[in-house]
Length: 232
Image 1 (cartoon, one colour):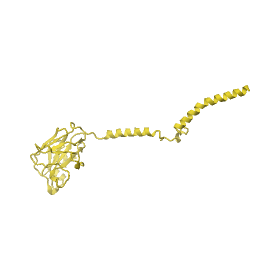
Image 2 (cartoon, rainbow, N blue to C red):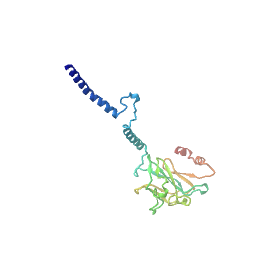
Image 3 (tube, rainbow, N blue to C red):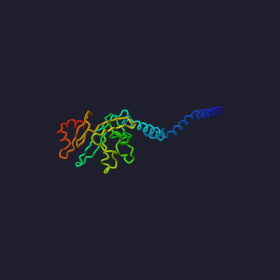
Image 4 (cartoon, rainbow, N blue to C red):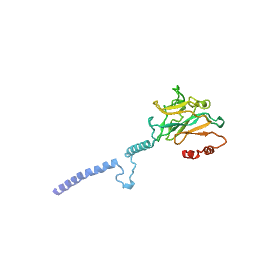
């Protein structure tokens, strides 16, 4: 009887000591049903991991996208020039009166809210991005990029143009959205053709609009072929 009692007591002790280990295994299996499988058979895309991976992925992607976006200079940092000017267009060749704005800086600029005027007393001028019907008109210019805008001379044929025309003797002024003068140019050009700012930004090249000669032939005759090629 004494031996039977000792065996029974030993069995109870063994059961009690094994109980917690069994409970831990059960709990582990409840959290991860693949815990008992070899590593190469386990499912690595558990639902418990998905929120964490998704959050990390979105965060990283957002950071990368933000980093690669081109920086837009502030009004104070923006550097612009007026170029690609056509005052007296050769209408027979399809040329139209226009004003070009070139971004001279190393970063993009946004012309939204900027104002372009053509003479003293024209306090309104044309405000970029103000006309809801002309949202497609380009206002963000990349570094060294140029945008050309037709004057009101083309208003009969085009829905979105500037609200004024230009002529020799007038002074163009470009002011940023805070009213600071960013570019100023007196139109002292009389030729039929286009006046383009030179790469150095010191003077303007006159480019006749000839139907008989190609642009390269005209530039070669004027001696600007090498400079124009470098500019391209």
